[in-house]
Image (cartoon, rainbow, N blue to C red; front, side, top):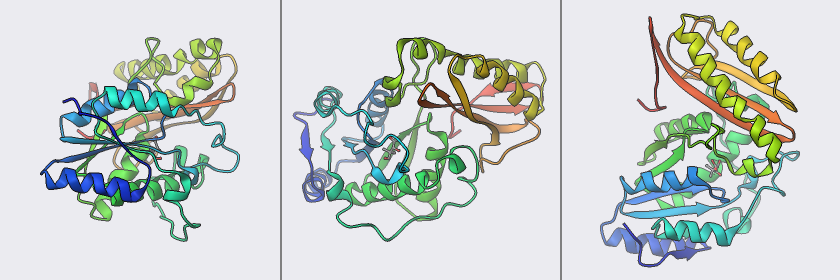
Length: 298
Ligand code: PAF
């Protein structure tokens, strides 16, 4: 599917006009929300969306409400021209690139409150983060009114919280999860990888290796979450310049820590390599002797 020409909308009104025309032509609308500085992970999400929609909308917006004051909002990588070319080359139809003023014309007074799913993992480490994500994603859902929206599984907690918002608030949107795309050395692709020095990039390959070793430990019969977490900690602590933020083994339905590894679980972690915070995860289905890697939505 190649789009004739990529249309760019910077205002809500322009976006709504473009979408109304696509809807009038009976097209199924797909949305891929991003914060820009696109990489192959985003490209794979756009590709995936082509299987589910006729009219592809990619949003590029670095959302201030999901950053805490000490986080990297001002230095978050941006390259609009490069993103535009990539999005056009992928055959998307509309690029929605609003300014902060357009999305937040006034200080918003309304916030989400997230129960259970944000209790662990990134939730306590990034207070207000998922509330900010839901705020912007729900605004994007209202503006674009997509039939389908695609998010990456690398941000597993975000993915499950957004799915829950869709269910709880009756958004008529199908959520599709895209698999994590990795660098040749196993590092999960992320716009923040651009912060890494060559040495740090090499070192960070250990994160995925450690997850694979955790899986092997479980395959060999280990079922104690604390033993697997300890093994992961030990492995990652050897990485030069690393600092563990968290490692959790949680059930996939509620993201609550488990003691015994059984059923559908996720091993999720965040680690600083130098100044850069990287996240990754592995989802497993463990049924007696059988251990299988599974996607978030099975
Ligand atoms: O995953 C991201 O890039 C962002 O959290 C999202 C979903 C685009 C919301 O700003």
